[in-house]
Amino acid sequence: MSISDGFDYVTYGSVCDPVELERFLGHTMTVNDRLVADGRRGTPVCVWGRHGIGKTDIVESVARARGAAFVSIAPAQFEEMGDLLGMPVVVDGGAATAMAPPEWVPREDVPGVLLIDDVNRADDRILRGLMQLLQRYRLASWSLPPRWQIVLTANPDGGDYSVTPMDDAMLTRMLHVTLRFDVKRWAAWAETQGMDPRGIAFVLTYPETVTGVRTTPRSLVQFFERIAALPDLRADLDLVTMLGDACLDSSTVSAFVAFVNNDLDILVTPEEILGARDFAPVAERLAELGGRGGRRVDLLATVCTRVVNHLRQRTTRLDATAVANLRGLLTLEALPADMRLAMAQDLMLLDRSLGATRVLADKAVGRLLLDLAAVPS
Image 1 (cartoon, rainbow, N blue to C red):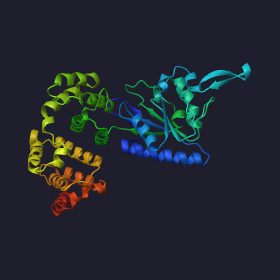
Image 2: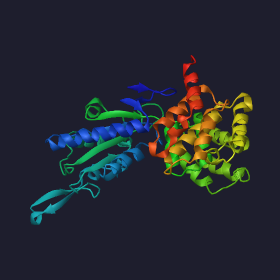
Image 3: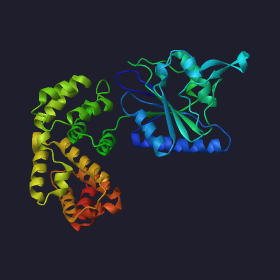
């Protein structure tokens, strides 16, 4: 159990980032599949975490990646037990009644995932009604098909969340894990979604603005989708402010306006770094960036992170120009030693078909990295 700062937020299980959560869910689902094949029941998983950080999307993504069918329900919308159990219908010519399951109940005998979203937003009666489903994968009126699994999401107990506490009898029917927001993982995901690069750069530069109140990864996506059609943010700053105020905390909006006015023009994009026929002007801009405001290491870190994320999404092999420019970036004196070493490690982990490791094959680069690694921290 972990308690967050500010409020007495109560969560359960290890705290993990999105990649770790995907691995955990994948492994757990594989084990559950094996248990079912042996005639035993799997165990549901409950993913805890603050609102808007991507719990639901990750669960659905894992299910889709496994080729599983996916059904999501929100028990907070259930008004009565009939929404969970179904409704009685007359059978045998009026001699008896039977329960007709709700329309959402999975019926196909295929691998599937039932997501019970925001489970602790439900009324206490509904929570108690779910207990048999979590333990036996069935209720009095219907059963899940054999190859279906159950995953739940929940907001933390305590603090400012309006949730129904779950007692030990319910908690012990599940495995638990807690998702936290990780800015680098989010930025990598945002690159794959074609998110506005100005928005990605802002979050990387000012991760502290993701407060978790009104400003969440979800509300930031809403904002960035709406500014994407504005080519010149500074020219439309009044509209940008209105769009920000519509979905973000005022402190985040103020930081974004300052970012547009002060930082946006001086950031160097991955495309500029990799494609420059003459790297010297790019190196000068990066050096200026490193010296601006006493040394804007945060902006340099943003540039490096975006370069690595760009390379992860690249499908074509790096040409000689891109390799030479990456070598120039790694040897740039404006970059702190730890940043160069971290970037070198990232390049080593990239797909070999990309050719990124050729950057490190240069003797001068290799010697520099060895010297930097030997310097005591």
